[in-house]
Image (tube, rainbow, N blue to C red; front, side, top):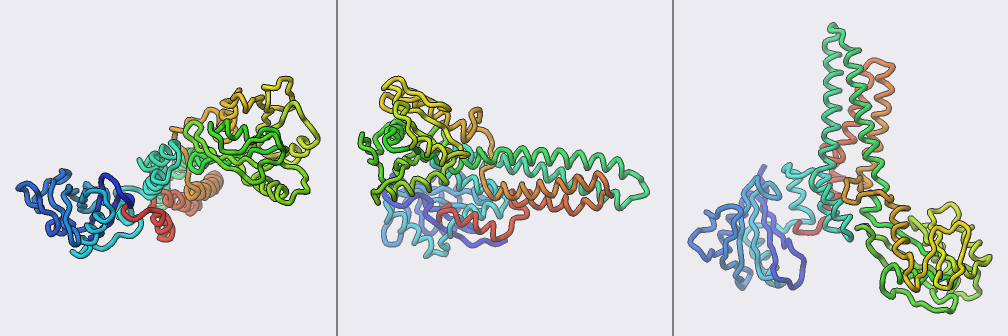
Length: 445
């Protein structure tokens, strides 16, 4: 299929050491011939693929000295012929080179168009493309690892193997229907039942990683709650290891939600220090308390902070308010001595840092899982989770049918399971889903 030439700046806007202008299509080398003057004797038309050539790059109304490299199809990112110009990193330089390429017949690329061409040309699956954008948008090392796992086709490999098994089961059912005189249905029934059971087990195993995976990808929301003056802001500062919140002995100092973030074992934790929860006649403080109550509902886990030397009815009121939520009860101010509270999970001193690392470990254990290896494979995307749930439902139905009815009755459910799995790899994904995924990419990728 003929592909027009597209072009874009592949590096971020702004001053930098190097800028990359990328072209892809049927004939980007012909455009390069018109705007690149090699410093050596090799003409552009005879460039050896995957080798950098120095020379003069023509822009709109100026030139720059840089590098040109040619990637020959299909051994390129997009699966098409690709040319890259590596210029000095001024924004005007890069834009000028891009404009020149467009004037010579290239079309400005849309968001994610290079990666979309790679998907269309079979260079990567839809799940791999999602992993790539996850890596680009990552804010923690665990997110990068999870995105890289997707990008390197690990999930696609697992799902494709499941589809292959279901395809074999469907072929066996069709053979039984075409040759009923062979009398092999019972033998086939056992084989199909085994395939469905194994596939269902694999689907459920993947579904079981989603809770941890979604937190690896999206981070964990933590709310620090308690009555005023228990040391919530001091604990936030101790966790972040810098002074984010104002600390004072005066109750009600925190009037708004103060936020910060940190990484624990590579996972990003977003921590909100809330106003002390209590009844107050102060209108501003009351507004802060209402914000605190909203944080309660949005958090994945709460740090309920108590001054162990000053336990009051207000503590018990807050405890009642958060009953049933994912709560770690932290008794603070152990540096004062003699602190205690029934049901405490941890005793800490935000002032001295005693046991603060234990708070981090408890946060990780309560949300991601104490023994979770964040370098492992996780199901991270909501879209994949929804597709696997549909596959699970169809496999369950097919397995029930195979146990009691003729094999061919299960065929529809097996095909629906296959189709649901195909949404992950892209084999059966709708154009709407594909558009949605590639719209998340920047221009140039």
